[in-house]
Length: 107
Image 1 (spheres, one colour):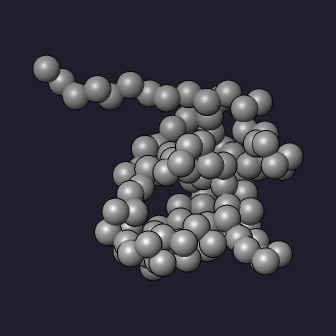
Image 2 (image 1 turned 90 degrees about the vertical axis):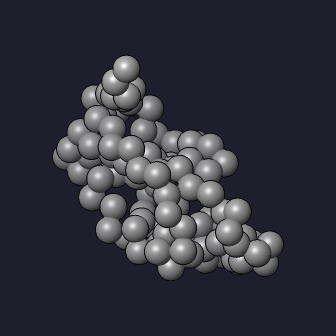
């Protein structure tokens, strides 16, 4: 059997997240985004806390989610625009995470 190669489509109206900002304008979105899934099993508990501070922010400082306008879809699932891929790869490399990436089209 062939591998499951379904295309995932996410309507543009769903890109307004619960924090009240858009992931990008229609021009910025350009129809592509990346869904990241990651695991933190390799990190010590103190490093997991630091990771989440870097991800979500702390003490009034913005985390990478707010700075890059990334949507957290689940506990370890992120949706980022395709043009933010370099920054996300650098972030995960710093934390020695090897996320799974899935490119998706946005309608």
